[in-house]
Length: 116
Image (cartoon, rainbow, N blue to C red; front, side, top):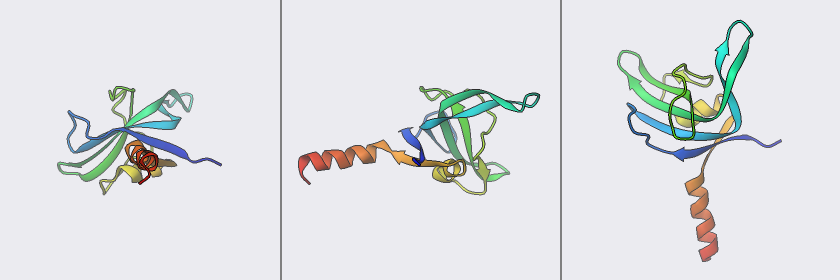
């Protein structure tokens, strides 16, 4: 069975405290939970993972639903978010995704093509 992947699309997003990154998910994640139906109303293939030391709360790493442009769709934290550390990969691993950095993969492919 193939792993669910989270591809790093954009590191170091602007207009965030701490470090925020945009990821594209191989399988969409639900957001906008409806407590009446017990279902998520929407899904997205993109998430922003934000790691910051919050004043008074300490380190926290939160996942937010986003669009392809890196705009947060809702500020409610998604499953996988946690407090006590600053780790993007751990947050995504908490919900079953393996993080893939495409820039690393591209460097490997370029090296192979160059015969390095």
